[in-house]
Length: 223
Ligand code: IYR
Image (tube, rainbow, N blue to C red; front, side, top):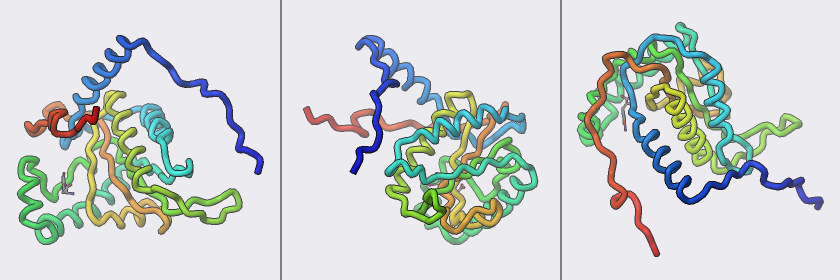
């Protein structure tokens, strides 16, 4: 078999050790300023920013480069409202019936409930779909690999890109999310992975006082 064409790695950038330390530290400081926001401004966002962030997400490492994701980007107020109604129906079930006492207790610090006004207010709702199959050049469905991992990585990169660009996000997972296929007319082979509420934070946005685990709790070094 003829080897698949390769070329020299031209995009890798190497930095001097001191510069690497500084870059790592500055990036950490930038990223740890990200907070999940639940109060959004209605101020519109330039679509070009969203497009660049989506292309950043689309560069994610993934199984066999099949890129098993689709981003449905919603700014149409009537579609946002339909999503709000669908999500609130599921969330109402969740908060009144489906969630265990233990789960509701874990959510107490965040003060969340079934009311989701940000789904109307935020200028963009980005629904990330994962694709079990892709279509080959002849239009035949082929199996995708490591779909959850790939879409999770792309979503993390999207959140990072949006934050870096100066936008706030909320990862919202109304469960089950099947209603999104109907509203957004996505095929059965796609499954909603996550809904990313995106925009500027409201001027009076509040966030809970929480902390992240220290390094000693999230990492162990074998040296
Ligand atoms: N999907 C619900 C509940 C919820 C669950 C978790 I885990 C959270 O970290 C936050 C919310 C909601 O959006 O309210």
